[in-house]
Length: 272
Image (cartoon, rainbow, N blue to C red):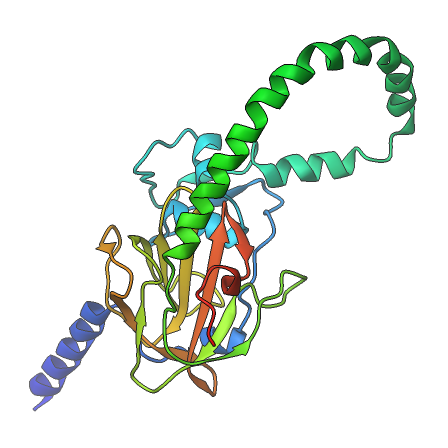
């Protein structure tokens, strides 16, 4: 009899490992802290098992391309457990350095003395060239964004119960109340770059890379249906809707542009 009980316990443990994603994770859901983390004081992040460069960039609100360049990591951006991902050279560390050196009035006075003699000829010489090139670059980016935003679709049918806020620890996306058992779908064509539960405050999370500019994230899932590096089309099922705490079923949906959270309602189709 004892052998039978032992065998059942072993089989139960194996089945849990195969599922990989638990259907209940109240501690993670209850935290409800879908926020951008601050850069560690150490200046680097130690890679944990299951993390990707995309999930690390997502966690700290950075552009994955910028993080890859800072660490000399080429596409397809493969990283390894215990590897150090350094933040020096990224926009966040640059802004932190600038903020620390702000209260220095003397250098400002010196530059004002030098500027009058240098600026006039430089402005006169470069203004025609800048006027010829800058509008073309801006217009290309605008066209890209219009095409991308025009192809978005809602990740799930339901009512938005919490809107976007980019201040403090407020929501970095929107919460959508849905039907029990509803499928969470890709909002646009792309590639799954993260599928797991390693980001605190997001539960079972799927991140999809749509192009070099946009990522979308689908959090608090009951069960994940896709794998990393899997290509998806708009409308393909990514997961089964889950929730957080007692607030179920619910999807937390985010959109990042160049690593920064933006209001998903600005890219999703308008609902009449």
